[in-house]
Length: 314
Image (tube, rainbow, N blue to C red; front, top):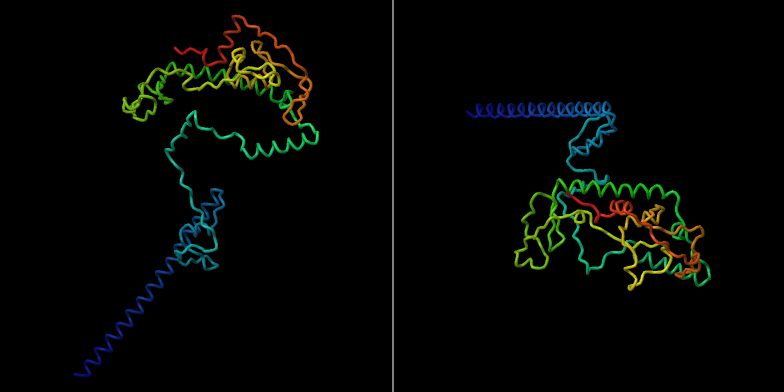
């Protein structure tokens, strides 16, 4: 009886060893087939990259797949750990549905176009030059002379301004625009929206609903005006004399100062530069009497093309 039990135990051990050997052979064949499959796929990827003309490296694909090459012949060993020596770049998510920047109230101070420290640094440098009696170096157009390369650009900008006003007026005749009479909210559409976000006077009684009225071109293209000066280096505009000067769109005034000649808005063209010592103008070529603008009936129609207030929408 004992001999029979020994024989059975020996058979079970032999069968267990046989199963273990078979399992090892199976795992070896699986690993070999996996390595061959990965190598074949990498060859396909490299061939595709060559056909497409892209310089895709095998290591880049390996890093993206989370593996690492350990064999010079291309046999790959699986490894989910990223390389410690290479920096990992995080893709920045592109924000969607971003709101427009809030419109600042009139009583809040706007930021400087030029940083304040830069302005102060330039002022200190000008002060040091003035203390030494050295004139401030000025180049055109700061010295009153025209930049000849900017004259054709100014004419192009003025023509583009006319096209913009005319095209926007035609669009408003087809697509209605509404504006809230109590706040600066603008809505483009057939009917004003019902979003309760009005912060104007009396909004509490209206439960923050907007009070829509028919809009105009000035609601879409907000007018920014400037005083027209015959001589920018001449006499300054005082409070009592502010109504003696015309107010025109700022972009038109910039084009005039850049070299555009408009008979209705004459401008002084200097031949000698302005000289300054610090903040003081020591030579401006003398004062010249401002000529009276020549305006006729045709001139009023041409001026209407430059101003948004002269455009009518049907």
